[in-house]
Length: 334
Ligand code: ATP
Ligand code: MG
Image (cartoon, rainbow, N blue to C red; front, side, top):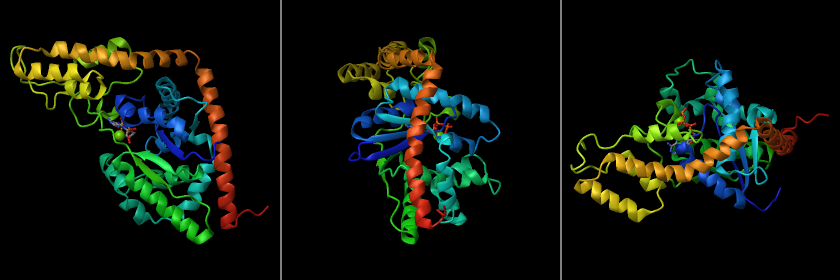
């Protein structure tokens, strides 16, 4: 490991394939950061089980799907360590030690957990594992002594809670753990095909990285535009028009987009034409990613071997931290 690079811990829950929202929200950054940072990317299957205990097949089958997405976008296993959370039992032992440093009331106050609990309709019957997942995240982050955690604004309370645990631990047992910093993603969140604020698996308004050309075309053609733009010659609205929102994000030829916007607004430019242009733009960017994904998918054993190697490497790092933690607490007896 190159010791002078900042260390990143990040990852995704394997509850489905990754979509263009994940691409602009995190994947693009991770590909960029893998050269300047020591990057650990975790497929968080343990965390996925905290609210999918009754559906382990969904979690299990999506581990490889998420790995395929990672490899397809250009995460390089020789630069980035890709690993599976459940393959590192050390993380769970760290979680157990940290749980003693956190009150139930504090967990219930965590704004991220609170809003997710509301969304999922959990009351007092919330799975205990779900309630304490910020502690498990603190274990993930500190196991790798990660100094940088890329997050969206909504995840900031998790970083705060991690650092509270770090300070409390170091206070009681001595300086072992390292505080971490949030790296706020500057990218706007990607809206859904339907015009909803967020592209999200559970809303069914996603373009997946693995979507084939036909599916991509159908999805683009179904995108929400301006419902009042009925005849081609009518002036159309840009605001809230998903096709232009996506062009703003993905098109590199800004002049053409500006020209199309002006034309659309004064009338005479039909939705179909703009959608066809967006399809071209998305094909150019995501076509090669889809092809790479399909190539990796032909040899799933090789992909699992990448995850196995990554997990071995991650396990060695986490085991070292766990050893230091156990020694500091005084439970290394033998
Ligand atoms: P679910 O519907 O199950 O919540 P999702 O599609 O919203 O799934 P998550 O697993 O919740 O995906 O997303 C994990 C992380 O990916 C988010 O915290 C965020 O950083 C990023 N992300 C997800 N969707 C988007 C989006 N539309 N735009 C930008 N970033 C996104
Ligand atoms: Mg979500």
